[in-house]
Image (cartoon, rainbow, N blue to C red; front, side):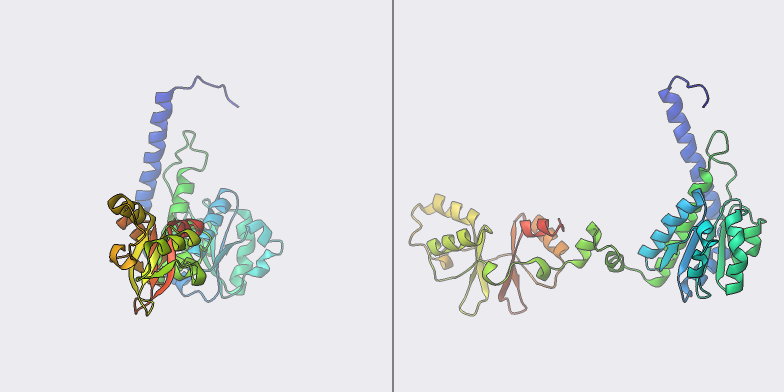
Length: 329
């Protein structure tokens, strides 16, 4: 390694800013020159009857793995195959129905060029992403995407920096164009990310996590407050629903309502629910997204919701803790 210089904060900051500007300029240049080859690549991927196979070596391989993951999670079946492994058996995973996205900034990566004849013989479509339109890989490809940059952001103009950023961004542009053309939605994204926060917000419905059966706190509107207190204590949810003879919700009574009632009247033993309940409880339908329940709780500054059917009959109860347990919140 070279001699270690004394760290200068101002110099480091200036260099960092220059790197970002150089890489941003490279992306702007590529965006300005994007044309028919890009749309041809999108068309090939959209009409692919098999899978999108992404391949590369070294830094291009790292980028390829990320791009394969991006395509796969946004509606385009894809996986990464290392070019060196492909030359030693993994090439058998690629069929004539597949589209291969081969990434090499120089366009002369030996491992990729080794498998190109077989890919062509099998009939797979080859999309090359290089920084040299005159390279061997570019010439052998069916479609060439040019990610050329004028220079690397590295002060030595050696370490792949601007070029890797350009390659990644161009691949992202390709993936986003494909997802848009497919009409890919937030719900589609959630289905491929069921373990993530977005998946939980978009896939979990109220009926999946609400309390049902004996877990629902409920009393008739003609019972006393003391009966309601017993139900609240038993069900551990901080409230009870109030229903009529047909099971339709007519109100709610919470621990907060109880405290306020005691402060107001003192002796509550003779109080009847119909006279002291809150008559406008916040309700939600079972088919609503749990995320909608979160929004309601936040909007109305409450901790519980009653779940009702189309006839306003009580079928469930939902507490803030239920949403937290399901990791929707």
